Image 1 (tube, helix red, strand yellow):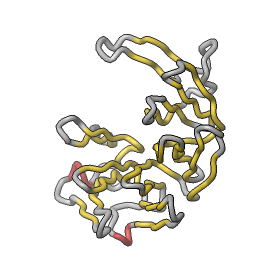
Image 2 (image 1 turned 180 degrees about the vertical axis):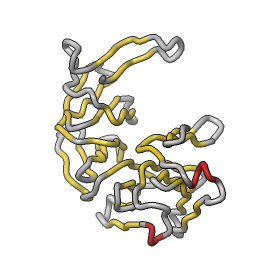
Image 3 (image 1 turned 90 degrees about the vertical axis):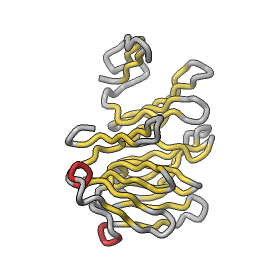
Image 4 (image 1 turned 120 degrees about the vertical axis):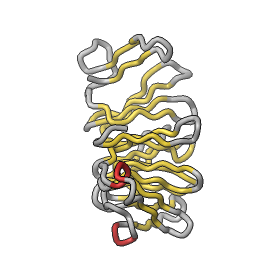
Length: 212
């Protein structure tokens, strides 16, 4: 049903943007990700629709190309990463041109220390160096509990991966993997795509098929 804007204190609906609303910038109501970049602009994308960017300083909406999008990430102040059903794309905010970096079905993206980490559907975890263009793939053969990596975040110097077969901790330095087989809620849950949040106290919250 599109995008709702709510007052953070009262929860009151301030605005609703959808294909059914007059003068709405949205032509599709299936939104998969909302991302705030370093400029304060809000990016909205979803199922095979135009990417919409709300320019906060100018108070207007800007339309980009049609993309079947699952996730956003910011590579630098001028370039956005688009996690699409056909691959990882790099989009120039000014020219609106994009190019494919990796061909895969992307579920989530994390940029850390200039390296792009990609959670995929069936190809495990991919490490992509934007400067060299080189990529490395980590799968169940590397120790992951599943090749379906649905969500990625970082904490305490590690990558934390929510997969179809539980949570795991990935060391980006030595590429070691730690799983949690004795904790059933972490090892037997299917973690949802791009569904995680770091709380103020440093704890991580995840969305799974067994709740949060």
